[in-house]
Length: 112
Image: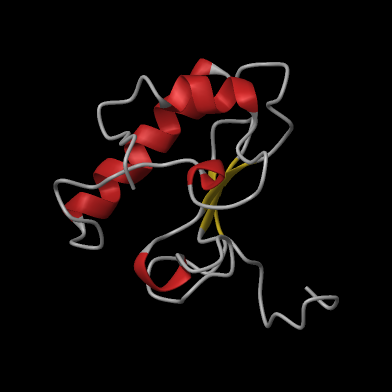
C-alpha cells in the first residue's frame, strides 16, 4: 500500500483458504485492483497462488455465495459478469488454474 500510495488494500474482498470472505474496501469504495476497471467493478482476490493448482471447492463455493450476497444486497446486477484480471490487463492474475475454474462459472464472460 505504501509503495503505491494507496489508502487501503486494492481489492474489495478476499477469499481465504479457510472458506471465509475477508473484506477489503468492500462494496462501496473504489478499489485499486485492475487498471481502467476499478470504477466499474469489484475486485475479488483468492489468497494463494493458482498457477499450478486449483482453488479448493470450499473457496469456489464461498466466492459464489459472495456473488449471491452482492445481488441480494443490490450491490451487483443480477446479470453480473465475472472475468479474470488477465482478460483486461497484462497480468497472470488470477493464475492459470483458477482462471480455468472461473471459466466454468455461469457468470463468466469471455468478452468483458
